[in-house]
Image (cartoon, rainbow, N blue to C red):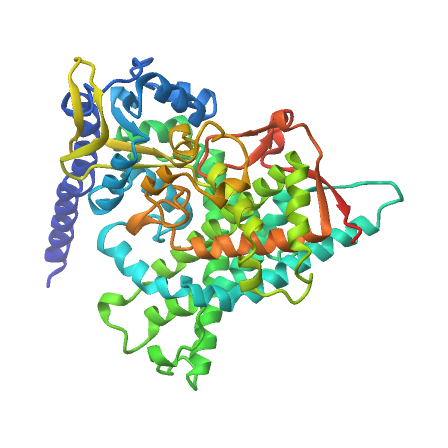
Length: 558
């Protein structure tokens, strides 16, 4: 080919690329932006009861963000009933319902109600192509690969790791108490300590990798710091990112903000450590197959049952069907996903359990009396799991304190959703169903459902482990994968690791509460939660310090 022909070819290639750019990149984003602008006109939700629009740009979102979101929405439920809509940005409508028949319908039709694309993009900044971010056939394939890691027998096999790390944490706390002068009470931020222990647990049980987070100065410090920076930054978008969500064409404008820079740096740290974990596991599996990089791994030759071994098997085994394979990016995404889901949520929930025990010392004493029936060392997973009062404490904590308390779904096609009871719309018409049109958003608040007096009784807001001796009959109507509470969601999108989480929380509480008395270090009214993805505690008096839960610790005199 002559030089002039090459130049002409390159010119035409660039010209074709420039012509295709609007179609491939801009047009879908323009379409999505127009769909958002038109949603208030076409929505099936516009005639539902609900609050008046406070702002065309922000809708009712400003009211929710100004306080604890669930409190605002619970107030609207009292005023408008279990089925209503409120306004989001640019006047769009969002369905909110605590009607368990509505919830069950959406959960049962999960494929038709995916997460909205902007939520998936936000989560994807941290989690990559992990289980929480993907939809459809990809989600189904990933879940099928991972299901064996979370069955009852596998959790029992992993329980020695839970005990080891719980006992290590107990030893550290007792050691710190022993170094204090006489008559001095040790104060600890239990959220921070439990976060370290949970990170170690998910590292060993999930990936066969020891973060050694309970050992100060380990590489886990950089991972935890990077995760928290990326996590916090992605959930606190700046004005440009909010405008990009509303008008996707603005994604062409580069974002050079300090916040974005830190999020990118943190994400790079997470990828570096995650990639090292994967490479170490691959090397170990290849060595077990009898050779180096040229060794052939077959699925039956992979004996390890930790999550990462199964993922790597689906990544490199020669006899795994193409439809069941996972890419390197998908494997990396699962590490980030399970660090968040198996670390942040478990440590936060256990912290809330200890908080409730400091608020109710009589419950703590009753629980400790039960725990002392088993030896501090040598108790088994089955023995701890069978303790009835501990079970009630954990269930009641999970009911009242949902780590990830809300989520949003968007209808991928039109649906007529039935309700349990009739309601009256804004036109005065009694209705038994909701017209949810393609593009309409549905918002779930799991904490609100778990605190409904119509289900749990007039004492629904009280911490009462005894209620689980005889749960209310109406609880059976709540869609759930665990204990008729909405905490772990339900259906095909229900939390795959709920057994893992419950076992770890029980073993942590058994090990710590048996030998340590926990007392409040601050007044309960100083504790608040903020509307982010994970409902962490922080102090009203010290918001600049971020998430924390300080407690006073004393040694039990058995």
